[in-house]
Amino acid sequence: MVDFSEAYADNSIMIHRRIQKDITDSLKQFPAIGLIGPRQAGKTTLAKMITDQLDKPALYLDMENPQDLQKLGDAQLYLQQFQDHLIILDEAQRKPELFPLLRSMIDQDRKPGRFMVLGSASPSLKRQASESLAGRIAYHELSPFTLDEISDEKYDFHKLWLRGGYPESYLANSDDGATLWIENFIQTHLERDLPVLGVRVPATTLLRFWTMVAHCNSQLWNASRLAESLGVDSKTARRYLDILEETFMIRQLQPFFGNVKKRLVKSPKVYIRDSGLLHTMLKIYSYDDLCANPILGASWEGFCLEQIIALKPRKYDTYFYRTQSAAAAEIDLVFAKGLKVEIAVEIKYSLTPKLTRSSINAINEVAPQKTWIVYPGEESYPIKENIWTLPISQISRIFE
Image (cartoon, rainbow, N blue to C red; front, side, top):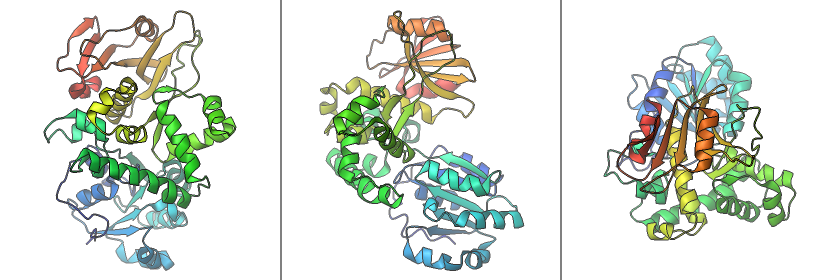
């Protein structure tokens, strides 16, 4: 049986993860499953929860554990002993030479549920796996906790918004405890995790850059402005941004280009993906601090955006919409199939949310089937035809 004694130290609190059923279903169909997401988001814990419910034994191997690496000195000889197990490889991108072997083992016995590959560097893991496991692996992304996952507790989106969704932060005994954990997480990510992934940028430089991005949260990416402030060129600034995106720290939301007749914004909008990270980097340590900070609206936008995208069905692509014309048109989120926008979402931090002229212009231009205005209230009601307000507690209705 699997031994998670080192990988999972505290199982006193188990929060059901939304993608657990999807992964279990994929294990019945695909020989390999890729579970990606930021470090400390709960991938190992989720793997334990899944294996506890399987009718087969599991083997857990951590590519950061010297003892496990030693076992894989002759990986083929070692792994062949466990052909009836689900073999879980944590931080698999750190041992890329395993992937051709996994392909060979799968092709020899192509039954479902043979391997689960966990990784915290999305492009690195996908590139390595796609070269060897194309057609044999299904990917799932695990984000930190989201609202629907904590709804069994006392419902309080303010706590999740302030602390973010990393389990150790959200479940901390106090806001100060959450802040301390996040500060250590940031330091570890910069000083240990990124160098192991081959990133050769001084931690102090990346921290300055990351903090600058935090101050620009929810704004259009301006490479030249950040590069000048940091004393580097725009290509270097872009490389820093990509590093943080590839390790799930930031999100680049691309603009929608469905209307080729309009002069559209081409730069992405940039968000710190976890609100707890954003607040700690900006020295916001309590809900009162947050309410008094000028970044309140931008923080709310980023928080709601992550909650909504986490619920998005695979069939939709996610964008924002903004024109550069005199009659400006802008809306926070659009969900499209191909070139057709089906859903638009505007995010407002107000108990009496209203659409601006630019939002109305955007809705008229992209013509969604329905528009939602997500806000921190408690009631959903229509504003115009096919335009409804929506409390954040009801955001699952967006994709119904």
